[in-house]
Image (tube, rainbow, N blue to C red; front, side):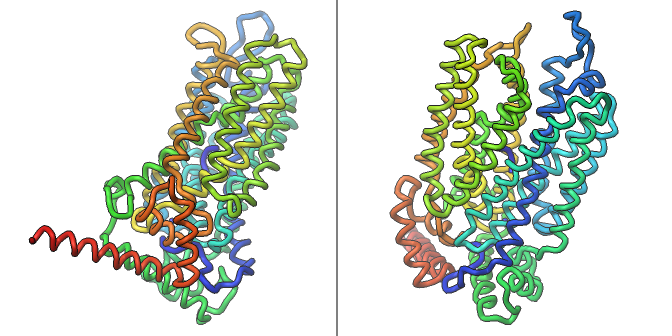
Length: 536
């Protein structure tokens, strides 16, 4: 699902740190509230654009003599997908904002941009102003979708980092569910309040997130990077419920400094550096982050959440709004097992099994849809059932895990920039799919009129997700962010499971900083050997 998550360190909680730092866990989990803002804004338009008063305000009378109003396919594409265009640029802006203002204040600034966009939508009575509002709201969402997973990855204890970052995806699903419930509750109101109420509720999410972030500490890794040592110690102490002078705080800060020094030896980074082939495979890692977000969108999940109400309506289902609520309920509750499994079953295994499950479900939906009449009640039940099973597979696997992966695979010196490009990739594909889908599925002149046959496309892309994961996604469960650096330097994704076990044993013995210093010595020795051979 669209997007929705950077300075050194392995998540907090190095070797020897007890697993009871609930203050830090709760603080970083609260940051996931941004997912509600993200998910609600993404989902609310699906119901708003079919409300009678919204269609009468922004559309034109239909030519079928029914007295109803409608919008053209091009207008529908624009209204739905323009949010993603804004989020694309917002995600790219998040990198300089996160490296300048910090993760905390960057999120607060993003909430202000988002609120401005919401205000424009509430005030609009014509498509142009509504679209401009969607762009600004999208920019805010794009910034949030990059900065929050970044903040969480840097501040959460490493032993629960996957689950904490997965909370962000869970919050997105809650936002989608809330949007469908509010849409369903206001759809029959006879005036502008039908769509203005669900739109204006977004002010609440922005206020809660910005107010909460104001009270939370800044990322200690960002503060170390900026040379604010005392502030970093205070921030870290709050996150692990200790005194700034506690030995645990000193050990954690030493690990952060060690990683920062290692990265600084490579020099200051630019966006171009994200695409350089180096000893720690920055190019491969950057492309992995960009493409895992693209493949997440190509699972077809946002077809259900953007156009599900319209799709179910055209499939002959009598109450598409309630079916939309039901699919969102499945999405919310099935994300919980994914959060639990992220740090138990592992990232790679979940992505592989999820791709298989989604592929099977989508081909079944497509085959049933083209083989049986729309009036067949049993066929309708099969469509709904396998749509829910498909959403369950996504919610347990590709929904949260794609964000976990992009939050942890990048090295410090390019993390903010690579993370912003990965998130921007999510939104670029979100925009493309959102814009193209009405032309693919709608009937009428100039449209492909695929209808349910579009699930053959989504099934094929889910098969592509399996191939991509097998060759490009390593197993990173339980590793510090420094350990992930070492893993990329010394093995391939296909062989990463066995190498990860060895790394975890070394981290327990030497600590994350010790493992990285050991590998750095190897790199330096290899470079010296190469220079010697050149001289000879």
